[in-house]
Image 1 (cartoon, rainbow, N blue to C red):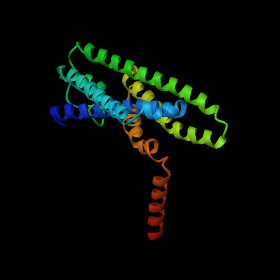
Image 2: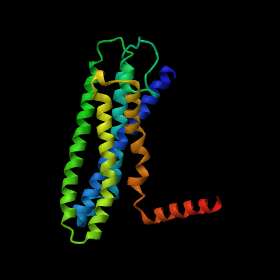
Image 3: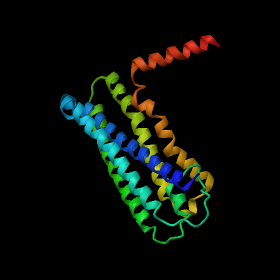
Image 4: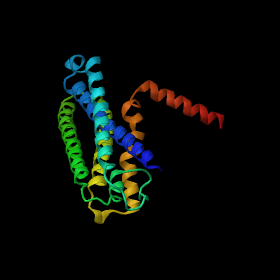
Length: 221
């Protein structure tokens, strides 16, 4: 890949990864309001509020990607041009740097991890309130429905945050090509692939349509 292509790839990767996590945080707030404050849902999460939160998520992802890409590629790279990864990723690009002034990028990574940790704390706090509210629901069927809506989202967030932080903050002694690839796939490929599950597969009409399509294909074969 060319130098410009690598910078472009890194920018879009960070942009979509950042926006993904901020949207997952917004989705957590949506679940919190719908379960804990259902009477205020229309006021707190109207169309304008949703548009503002979505715009903030995309803008934050864009700013995060721009800062990291500009800082990373401002460093001179002189240790070859082979990356030990299947795409351009910051830790592996920094290994090619011959400059000792990469403290700027490391500082920016630390700030990013702090922001991600803040969002994660918000998500955990929200889910504590959600589970407390759900456990007070008298109907077992309604409790099951609420849990089945929240658990896929919580599982994806946990996988996304834990593997992402491990990929960027693990000590060099734990680094190996196979481990780096496996961890990167877990935080960059698996959570987006599970988006249909947490966004729409709880919808009964969509599940029915998917089931009809599958049974139709089975009958053809």
